Image (cartoon, each protein chain N blue to C red):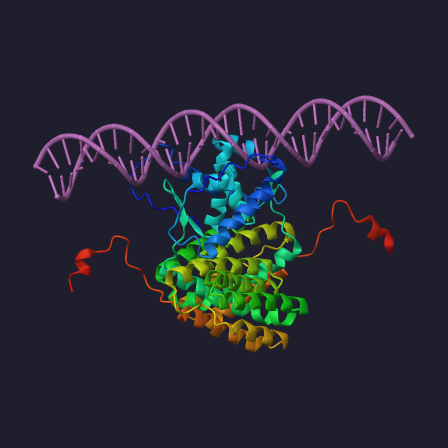
Length: 239
Length: 239
DNA sequence: CTCTCATAATACGTATACAATAAACGCAAT
DNA sequence: ATTGCGTTTATTGTATACGTATTATGAGAG
């Protein structure tokens, strides 16, 4: 995503180093959305955000634009920003895309995964377990997205892993809208099983497993268009 | 030096068409990059762009941010924007991603393509031929990217087709950096052949053909790290 | 003659001020 | 009572001003 790593070392700090500050704010908002602390439909007023984070609207606007391009927030011309509420079509598209890309990546991932990679995955999976055990569903969802993103990054293909990362973020929104409260998206042991397959370099099995895994997540949702707030009276009374 | 007046007179700065105006400007810059009228490495000064298009730097900044997120321009913290010069690694990643996604989409595309879709594709391919015949290589490259993007959009999956569109734009940059001047990327009859396969609903063949097509494009490039801008003179003259 | 350091100029980062517009509220009329 | 219109308010869109960093230029010393 962001390619701003030029200043290595060099303790400037003079200007407050806005770039880093903005990155922080971006992460705060992004995480809040992925963890469902900001629910789809929530309005994000520039003034309020500027006030909360202690920067001016200029910086906030930049961040909102970025989030809009990642489809996490929706920018309506004269009405401001709000957390995106994915449509049913978008939800299906996202999962179809994840099927294609994440599964297609598994061969390469299984081949390239190092001990360090597997260790990092295990750590995320462990934290996911912990969060589930504590009943913190929001945290678990965020960690699940992080797991899938990290997994894709092992492929070494930045174009594809960035894409997967964005899809996983959007999946988190989809879970918020179409998820059944009783059923969590990822079965808790799935990720562990997948790590095992990678460890044994079983690319084919890992691919098939990922496909089932994603199918299971999608199947646990009820993806259908919600009734609109102002129902179509013509259709209602036409039959 | 163009003495571009700040377009006084007509309904100048009136606020209403701001969004549309920005979209125009975005398209202008984006097209100029894809058509290689702005070459990789070219610097894009905010003041100059603001002057050229008759808007203030604020709007230009917004557009540059968007282009940066699409990886068409690179934003360096205190040095401004320039047209992205893809690295060899990025080039490989982009073509690997295109292989996976564009090929993976062909089944769905072959199944869903309507007569109208095929007609639109034929039109683009025809214009591509014309451009090549006139020797306008830049236009042909842009039309080729448009062809691939339109093709992907037939799948109906917005998430994936938007991704492909971005990859094609980046491919255009890659052609600019790593392309051999003598050899154009796409063989001119390839697109026509592909349309024929789609028309006959031969998804499998279309997928295989697309794979070869992309391989051919990639093979026509010389993707290797270029020498740095400050070449090592000792090494140059040592042999 | 070349290299280095200082100074000036250029260009970006951020904040703030102003303008325009869409939503919300209230009032009035049917 | 409900609908339609006018006013008010709140929020975004745009421009501009100022501060700071980077770069280019020139002078001086080696």
